[in-house]
Image 1 (cartoon, rainbow, N blue to C red):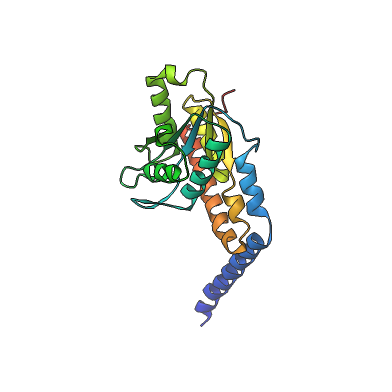
Image 2: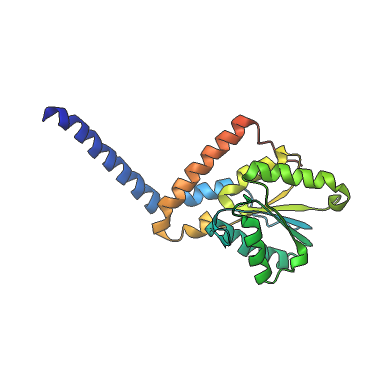
Length: 216
């Protein structure tokens, strides 16, 4: 019996620690502050080309929640700030979230002719590289045009610097994704885990040299 007592005590301590952590996350504004810090400035820049990063896809025709909010705000920003063009970047090809987001944008009143998609990218790093290649192939199209990057609040810190690492100067325009979902206390633990995952990705990108200081 003594041999079972020690593991049982550790399991109880672990359960208590997890319970306290969950209580701290759901009862405090930590995830709101964390998402705000990763978002950076909220000055809503305007420009000519709106670059929208895809998020999750539930299946070949259905976007996930973060893709949904990015598309919702992209449609609003495009119309309110009078952008000339939207580029939605991100696949992967098996589940092209960019195409599903394009269909959503069209349904929200954005002209189909104003939307381009890039579906080869499977992550933020590849989106940055593929956008850099597209700009290099047609420099006249993008010369003297202001590029604005739109993505979720918690995703902006990494995305902005990944595009800078690829040589693309953008203006960050985060949207309230985690900050909006924070209003539902039941979602806060899930948001906390997303933020932990995002910081792990930041560390990985930093180690690979895929992040750079923003281009002025």
